[in-house]
Length: 206
Image (cartoon, rainbow, N blue to C red; front, side, top):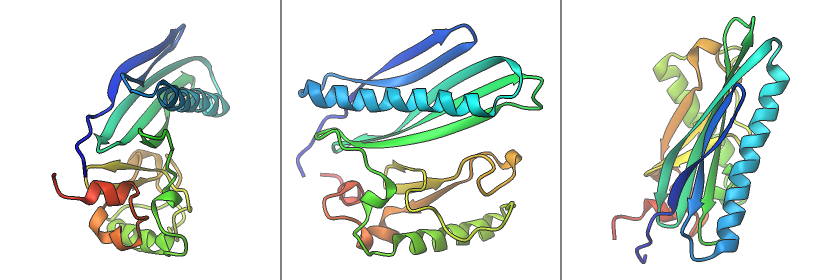
């Protein structure tokens, strides 16, 4: 595997009355069309999250704060998570939405969870089983039990781990926050698509 520099990242912002949102902006890529494609996907996701927040705010004078974290930026793979917190009076507490994106920076492709695995691999059952183990080990409270993840459950990639997570209230009470479940790449590598993100990130240092 040939060495590849990480993608250049700058912080962009959306600032207006009651709104301060910071998001990543990819720079310095040799292919400007791919760079624009990635940045457009990120910004569209930020806007979608704002719209999602608008649907759950029941009060007035809404305050919105958005941040991001880069989880992986190596070997041509960029994985990040965006978070958006909003509060409007007189709600008892604010509400946070999180969305993650994983890109191949050489092609601009965005990977859903299902894209990481071979067709027919049974990844939903395998990941659900591993998550169920962690729920029991961590003694996490559940709202209505847990059966299985969605085929395109939220996730991000961090070093050699696949981190599957759930939104507020999706499976746990609000006070738990976002339940996140790190799964070693090597536990699911046999199901991974050849030359896909899990395969690429699992290779030893070169």
